[in-house]
Amino acid sequence: MVDIAERRRIGMQIRKQLASGVTNISLILKDLELGPLVSPRRTYSVDSMIKAAIFMQLKGLKSYRKLVMHLKCEVDDRRNLGFDDALPTHQDLSNFMRKATEDYKDKIAFVSEKIRHYSLEYFVPLDIAQKNSTQAPKVAKLGQDIISGKMGEINRFAKKELLKRFKFASRHHNAKYSDKDFINSLFFTTTTHRFIQSGSVLFRMKENGPSERSMQRILSKYSYTELREILMEEIKETVSMAKRRGIITGEKVAVAIDATDIPFYGNLENAPYAVNADHQNKGTPYAFKFVELAAVTHGMRLVLCVIPKLTNGEMHDIVIDLLRFAKSLVNIGTVLLDRGYYSKQDMHAVDDEGLTFIMPMKSGTNAFKRIDRAASDTLIIPDILDNFTGIVTIDGENGKKIYTITNKKIKATDYNLAKYVANFYKKRWQIESDFAGLKQFMLARTKSLNYNKRYLLFAFGTILFNFWILLSITLEFMGLSPKKNVPKYLFTEILLEFLKSPA
Image 1 (cartoon, rainbow, N blue to C red):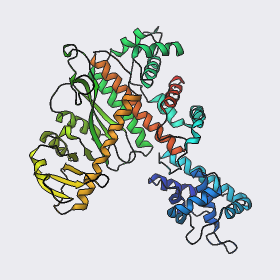
Image 2: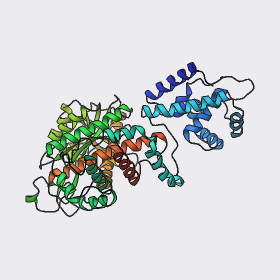
Image 3: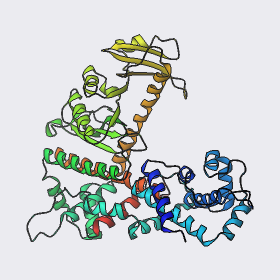
Image 4: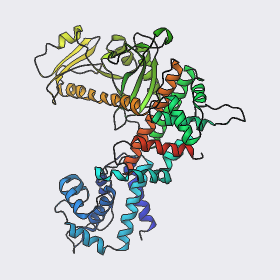
């Protein structure tokens, strides 16, 4: 058995590594002292063989042959485990484990368990091998494992924090349904992408929930101001959880701002908050518009703020509100904007907040015409527009020119930095994925002209989307998720179980 002092030493080393954000399993094992470094009777040290056995377990490799194949391909992993000069065969590994002492076996089990434990505690994604499609049938068992208690932290968060600010039920002591009943029904309707009418009817057949009439009534009870406050507080909770688990740290993150349209078909006189749609290709020039700011770097896709656009016109006031709220949550590094924000007011709104922005240049403008004359692969024009820098580079993938403008100070000959800035803008497309996922999976449908009701449904979907991302990251860290994101139907089952269970 490993003595207490050695357990404490090893545990502290592992904790320090994972607390610092190290995700590579072999790098975590590299500096651990788990056995003799020199063995006169063996070609390979005991320390390296123990680390190889731990690496195999954490990576989910099913045989020593697969471990050897992996180490042949991944030179860094091989060196981190201590196999600099030669690599053991699968027979060497098998013989070592067969003859391993109880002390060695106990050390392997202890280190493996500690790495898993601290990876969850600090929410650090281990570089676990992706499972192949033949394991898809295990999704059902995955749901059972999660619901049975392997996701204790997520369970506690779902029951004690998530959606607790929505107070739908009557405060009368004789009220038939609680807040949780209304939330469960709304959650079912949202994740099945149904209309409120059909969703509440189907849920009532399954769980004896509130009626369609009751659902319509409670969805109309909040004012815009109340809904915005609830949304912001719920987003703070999801961000706080991400911070506690190490997903969000003090490092600067890039954020993207974009707007999405919910098409409106009808008379504008009956819907004063419907505005002009950005894309008029869905049979209507009008839409209910929501502007979102989301973190899009370090593997994150968390929504940090959502504000509706209630009138036609410029959006710099909304941009300022989004940035100021997001700055209270995270350390913003770069703001990525699309062409819809190409105006001096929007640019100065970001610049005045002390943040760096990158956006594509709008064709037809004088600044664009100046930079479009570039004959070289890379051109930098400082002070092209109000002291902002214009950049044109060539996309290495398709050979097309990329036109961007930024407030980052770049010298006219700093080509490498210019190329980095232009390529960094591509991260903005993650927010497009956010909107697509939210509208497809997390948004209940309605024909209501009541804008507050529509905002409530969008806010509710945004909160669930953040939770879906957090849950997916958690399962990926644990090596349980067969896909990058948890399947929608499984997410529905998991959270319904959590919400039904007592707090």
